[in-house]
Length: 296
Length: 131
Image (cartoon, rainbow over all chains, first blue to last red; front, side, top):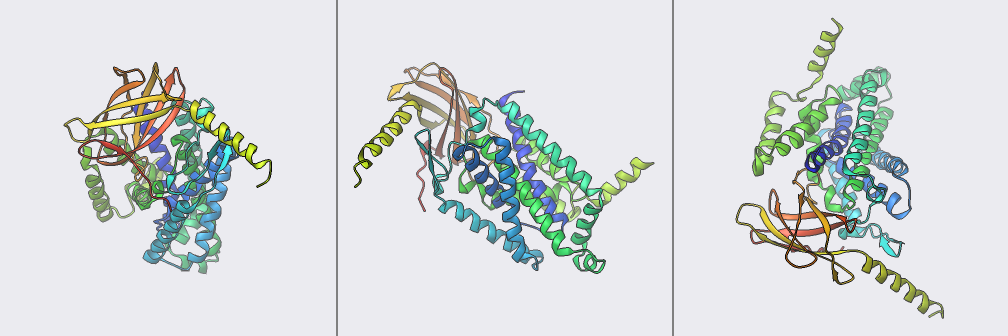
């Protein structure tokens, strides 16, 4: 596999974590415009862990996920009562606050005689664990793909469980779910924390793939894309967001068919799909038909 | 000032200077090639002020404001006329700020990152506003 193919596949896999994070919240009934900030939290936490404090990558990934879950939980607490557009705006505001926080973050320590760490708008250089440990891009892609497969397997399993049905019930109608005895607040908080952890995992992997991060990496553009991938791919299964990412990054961008006009084509595709299939290509109806067909 | 402060500061400064000398430095000069978003670039690699020749250089690019959303084909730079000079044609997808990732292998194994603003003429290093 050449460098280009490895790069495209790595981008697809990294974006998928963010799209899955947005998908989890959508299934739980919330549309977040702020998942890019959790991606950023994971990137900074993971980078700080390996570059500044010498953690190994696996430990850094765990630390990043914990940080992402905690921050998303803290955002979810005051926004629990909000719905629809107001919730979306609140998440966007929180994300911008975090991004500006990254711009104000100056925290460096000397490593091998060189200052390492976040330096405000100048970014955070030297996240070189992957490079220094001799992990080639293809091997890193394999690691990212393995983690993504594990996350997908876990999500598909949860979706078929009682917990998955509970999250979908809360997402469909929170009042009705509460009247059935479901602890809606708890379900929403757990879903939010899981979504934060997923986005942060993707962010930490992104930081190590890139060796460099800066606050501008985590602006609204990234969040809108991840939301669009989840909506295009469909909310019927965790495989939906992957379809969205592959469609845009893999086919539209990777094939270069539309060159500089890709964003226009992608925007049109999002608009069209939201009219024709408001819950995406792999929506609940398609998934139900597929499962029924398999049982025959 | 404490008596030990001066020697400690000197040691830190010397260590920093020694590290800076070990790390390769890169300077890029790009000119628009006549096609949309295509640039002919000359890269100058130095270490401790001396030209760094015999290095294999691969140049990749990503947009800081849209990370992962562009798949720019990494290109291998060819050795240029002068020692430590390398030439490459970079095909981007739009004008604006790009983060160029230089993968050095062979005589030197390292990874460098450069931020350049590309327009219809060529490219210039990006200066960031501090908060």
